[in-house]
Length: 98
Length: 249
Image (cartoon, rainbow over all chains, first blue to last red):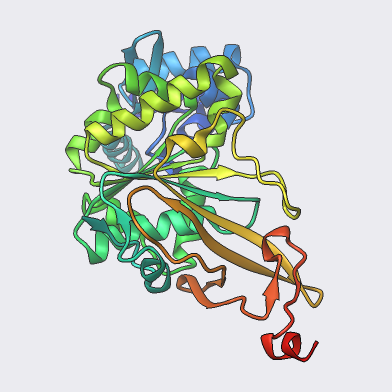
């Protein structure tokens, strides 16, 4: 269970290079409040390439999206991000113990 | 009435600091120290004057701001953790939306009880807002900040490093703001020096001299006026002829 859970969570969290880049971007710059277009530009990618990865991070709750006028604005959900990191750390610790 | 920048020489030039609730434009070409001055204003506000601040950046990533600030001994992350300062990285369309209705930026202003705000740099709005709408949008933004009683600093890039021309925007931003601080590179005896002057403050007198300044390990430090030179703003000053010499003529 632990190993499966760890694999599923880590795959959801990392999985692709772009997702890792997005996580790195938001962890290093927790003050980002921006649109998908601008976020894609900040990691040197095209908006279409980051959309799917952002949806996964939104599903996990690591990112949050709020609609303001015509714009969807994304930001890091620091509370949920911390929870996910703690969960991942606990799973790794459990996996190591086994 | 005044919001001191915490840079003693600049505050003296401003006769005490920026006028509270006003919008100040810090104009300069690349490398003149606009971002340093703006950050110093916020850090000093948070650490010396009990005034929390919000720094909005379009181009610089917060990680870069943290790193560069550390070089001046400013621990921005610590100030963020203490709820005294917040660095927000966004893009001009989001900022303009911020004016139109309540959004996360308004929420941050309320959350940290911000009294000071920096927008670095306002020049980026030009790339996102049609020229015909730019002045109106800037006017709306300025009034929004004033309604929130924030003492604001906008930075703006001037493309002319040297020369006798200075263009901030083509839409008259200099008329919309209350105060303008100009930072300029000047060449003196084959060395690049930096000059600082106050072009205007609405409703207040100010020092009209051009002063040399340096970016030191603790931030901006202004020094003496360029008394022995004239035409400093052109970037290529020449030695002024002493009055005594003129009398001999």
